[in-house]
Length: 115
Length: 109
Image (cartoon, rainbow over all chains, first blue to last red; front, side, top):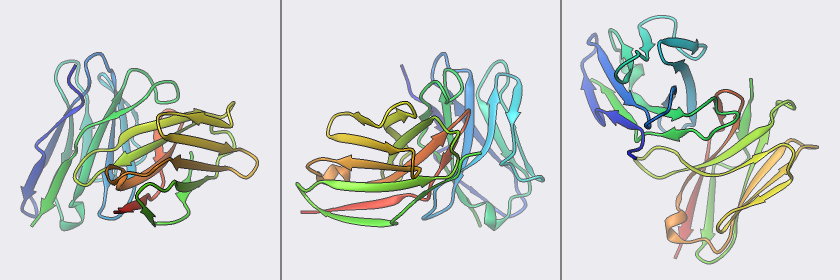
């Protein structure tokens, strides 16, 4: 059973371009969470999704950021018109249910560098 | 939501000694806490969890203690090994995880 798969592992974008980060949850998991980690800092919650639904996006910046988890395929975190401040590691986690009852497993992250 | 924070950003430990990492939380209603380990360039890895109806839980070489009176968590690692060098995060969980800033543990040979 493969773990949470994120791709790409490293992504370089020029300012103003779009970044698309993908996350395939563990088999059977229908809950996906995205976190952002700046250097030397902890993980900050961005968004919580279930299949075809956004449950909580309270950690998402109001502009340029969006996330989806379609019925088929991976979850996508999309950042439009990237700026240097978007450079960070973005981690995805998945769980069977909400984390209050079940363990969340993390992927290896996508490291976004905006030049 | 939950707010968690760690007491010390760094901890240097002699190989073979025991390590203690501390964490405080703010939400009295939280009933589930998790410790994660993150090695350089990798995602967080689950170590051990504890629910609020427990004071202590033991795993392999690790023990988590929960003091609800002072809203404090600790992670104890017995006989610390070089492979334990990493950043350790505590997280409070409701339907999402709220992480503290992390403690970087360095094991000296």
